[in-house]
Length: 219
Image (cartoon, rainbow, N blue to C red; front, side, top):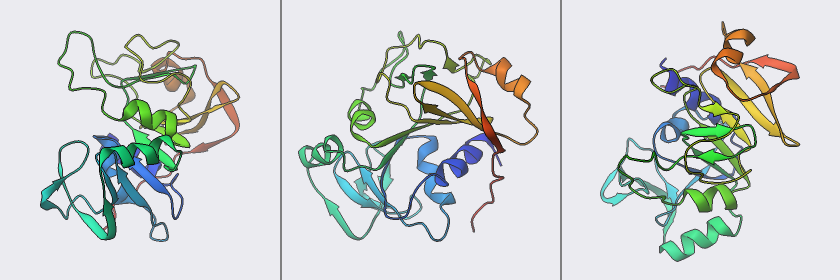
């Protein structure tokens, strides 16, 4: 399994039966592939869909918030952006799962632009991280050049301040509790020393530190 699949699998284990979930583009779109059989969720897309279907079953006239072809399930609802963001801002989305460029030890998130590079826009990220009851950031632990993405202080323009609840990477799972960043799980064969080296942010170790579950590809 590649790193993105490992991350998506671990995020899927956080979702609860009956939840309304918003998935960002990239790694988050893979999360439904790893849902346990007893967990059924409703996917919301901020462009106005409640009840997105599997990404493998698409309709040529429908796209999700990322502009990708998508499908819908029986009983799904399609509506305008005003109602969609009323759902988000009204706290009716249980969890949003977003990718991230940087997260810092103060639960701040930078996810939408790198200065000097083409910017497609903020999209619904600002509203989602403010309106969703739980915010999970699913991202690779380091950049392509090996730089840390979990920092003491974000250096890129912020998406939200003090809104991240959990970070899931291929190396570990971190949670914010009472303003502190805590390592809850580490990947098999990944030592605490390695995590310290690859994480700029200061973090504590959970007293019941666990090993991340090994993903199993669903058929």
